[in-house]
Image (cartoon, rainbow, N blue to C red):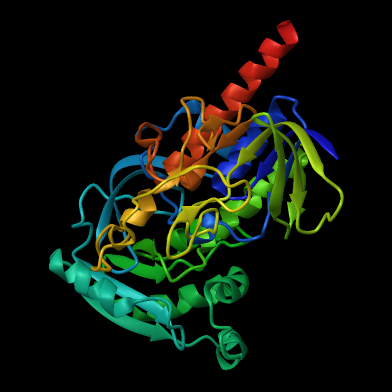
Length: 381
């Protein structure tokens, strides 16, 4: 199968690249294992300091609503992190002191929402907190099935019974000016979070839970839908396992499911993620890129790969594939001229492109622009 571009990875970086190329009339295929960094997405786009028209247009056309306000967002364990651009249902506050009295509501039997940690963090900011649980019969079959009381299962139910949850919360409210709920609303019906906010007589804040992220899964679903509407080929549940590279050029990709059928392209984008997503792997001696064996920047001393303090930043998160100025990765010291590395696969090797979701989007746009420039140059020649 022949495409203009083949994209390995169906996360944020891969989908932004795929949509952008399809919009330019290029034929593309996205190879996706099914789970990506979006399943751990906070809903906030780190390091995107300004809402560029290009970002706003791409997400708007996919049905994803964004808002912009410099400030901080509430983290799952009650701390705060600087933020500016976020999904519509993710609150950004001017300061951490966003409330006087807060009611934190959880569901009976749901253990992936850390009410007590939230309360502890907020009380350090001078916010009085009260924790209460509601018992919804519709969740009982889910609760009784071991391991099934998870965000996705709850979210599927909550899209149907959110009004009943609102009624229960109304009975619990006293003099609180804010209600904090677990982020398990709006998986398939994106209007549910705003409806809940309109229905309650207090400010409603949705706080993160243990992964998977409901806003992240919803974002991935909408991006995938937009990509396919544009004519893109989405290979779900597959992964690249090997590449045919000759004289610094990728000619085709072998995937796990297509067997002897190769994916050929004029250009290739590697958006398989970092160590967490298995886009990079490690053994006791090295950190390596498993599909093509690309050159990776990392410390030789394994003892420096991690910080013994779990809460501190981990050095291995900065490691990534080596690239030239145009995001062409190196293989044995030589750049692969029609291959581009984007997203968290870069680690912190390209700090000018940002971090987190900002890195995913910025590097995807940069690779797309370079692919289009190269195609135009070849056409003129």
